[in-house]
Image (cartoon, rainbow over all chains, first blue to last red; front, side, top):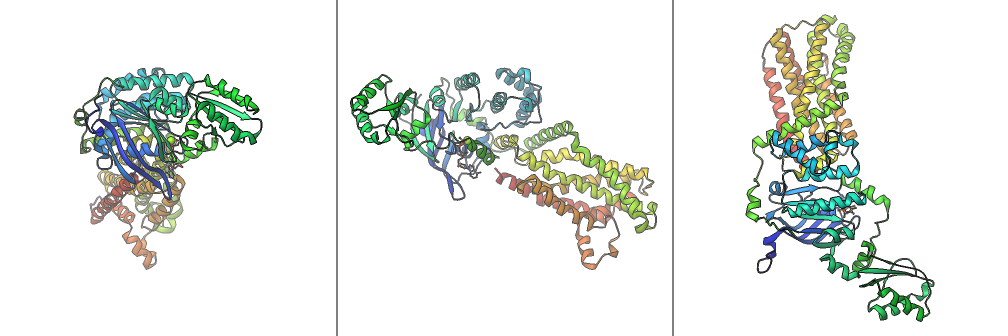
Length: 337
Length: 272
Ligand SMILES: Nc1ncnc2c1ncn2[C@@H]1O[C@H](COP(=O)(O)OP(=O)(O)OP(=O)(O)O)[C@@H](O)[C@H]1O
Ligand SMILES: [Mg+2]
């Protein structure tokens, strides 16, 4: 891609500076800068309540922008919402299709609303249903659809006019691993056809698999940005998780770890637990030997790929907090309604 | 990364700065189709406009007939237009509740993200609702005829009254549409609508002659648009005359739409 001696926003699909959204006293999006280049998949990674959906909604003209500037293909989001809506395909976090209509009717309806003739709308609907493996369910009411089918239909509905920019808000949350893999393939093929994609996710591996670049946001602010590789090196390729037999050994153990891998471990809120970022899983043995030589006992040990939690611990110094709280999702759902 | 990178000018060339009137009309018709399909699949949406004309026409006529006009037959020319207006009002009241429920559903999120005129998601259902007013008005008149009502205005007069009732229902529906866009829940819309509907229909000349009412109430009755609609429908159906009240009724409808349609669009936009 030609990026060199031109100002970057000439090739930006999305260019936003200092985006702000307040809900009363609460700042949901706090001065976020975003630059999504044409033709890339840009991932926004963050835990529940980070402000991902709010940010996308502002960019999609679905929420007023309280502060900052945003442009999509050079069009001002605030000044020309109608043009923005023609440039965008939006797949929200919760399926936005009509429960009272069949899959076929849904696609026909959305195509007609965008000025496609009735005949072409029928052709488009059946093409999309086939592309998303929904042709057998074409004439079933959506209320009989599974979660995965709804998601696929929702995505199909966003692609009717083949928009140059597509927003996907947590496209694979709640999908089984196989369906998730299919969704990833679909997303990749969209980019091959010239679309630019801005997606949000709570999963590091998803961002890693799909995105050319990632922004990590937390509590409304951007805490990191880079390619997946850059992000991962900040937390290591894998993580060694240790539980010390005696919580009092923590500072001694930290010293040992720092000596062996050259970096301090990340302490988790539980007493005596620590995560050590490793650029190479083989280094785990070195750490364990070091601890044994220092006479520090451990009760459990495991080596894992870094999780979003660890990225967060490393980047923000606190964990995602809400990610294990099942009540959060319900609350978000209510908020979104 | 992609191998195809579209030129920005090429991308923007495919967009238009705003919806034309033709786009808006086509979007409204498409959304009216959606509402009709929904009605067809949930026929209980027709219960009120079927049951109420049957029940109310018979009930009011037999209960009040003797007391108000001396006999049921004498009461007919007074009450049938009154019930027409009242049925129209209750039929269009459902608009607000329906819209509120609909707006809470996911599909409205998509309507908002599509490049469609902001009035289309409101005007579409309003257009589809006309079918309910047609049913309500037709049934009321048929029940009246079956009970012995013989309108002096003949077929043309009745047709005029029927049309005016439907136009009035469609216009007044914008008040309830607006309520649907500002209220927090469908129940709230229901409650407020009732509080508007009862005074509008009973504090009018729909059921009795207003002359027996206290002065302050007569003043309200005089300015109530429903009264004008009722009088206009009486003039059309009983005398076959296009009186000044027909003009006032139509003017009142126009004013209601001119105020509440823009208000509805504005608060719908703000709801984003
Ligand atoms: N309409 C609203 N009114 C008040 N607060 C809101 C509203 N919408 C969102 N919020 C708050 O803003 C914060 C960010 O919400 P948002 O939905 O953008 O998070 P998210 O990153 O998409 O989370 P998730 O992963 O759960 O979808 C949350 O704390 C949420 O409670
Ligand atoms: Mg979200």
